[in-house]
Length: 76
Image (tube, rainbow, N blue to C red; front, side):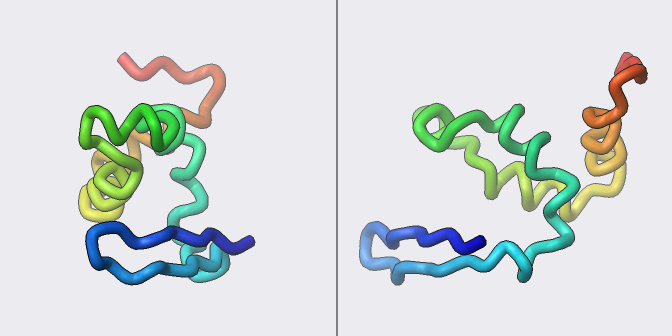
């Protein structure tokens, strides 16, 4: 699957291939649930990319995010 992001403010347009980002697959639903739609996150300046970068840099946040998929687990 391909995603096309139009550049704004002089930035170039970008074409993304989901096969290039397999390391992010476990976190897609989590990122969408917590960052919301692009129209929601743009108002607060907390988009999916910011959350994705945090997930990639922090092992403990990644472990907590994976608990999101465990239906019988309690987070607290």
